[in-house]
Length: 175
Image (cartoon, rainbow, N blue to C red; front, top):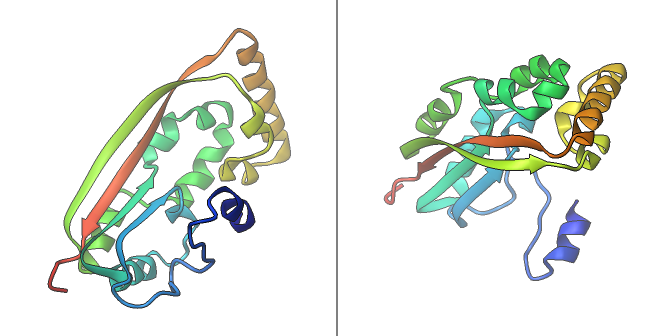
């Protein structure tokens, strides 16, 4: 992934590390931003402590993720219902992220749900298992879901809505 990123954006500095132990000095950043990452982090408390540490005073941390209602309503769950339970096990529970932000020292904590309509017309990302939850279900469940998805796509694009919950907090300027 880093090699691809370096090819696409050569002027950006790319680093490999662990969210629980960031390889940067205290106060190095004004903003930490992640999308679809937190469910892969084992020690979320460490993630937020590290985020607080590497942020400059007044800096912000934003993480974009799914909630239980979003997981249950998304198109992935419609075609691959076997993915729901494993997803609910690895995603943060309701209230967990605001609690972790607060306990790590963040203030101005906010939560917002955003959504965007789109038409699904290409099964390729599903075929490639581009969505990590597709690696968590049995092969026969994956095949069944993919067959249903392709059958529905034969009738034309599938109207969908992408939803995310955005959580944010700000490090106090004097911290």
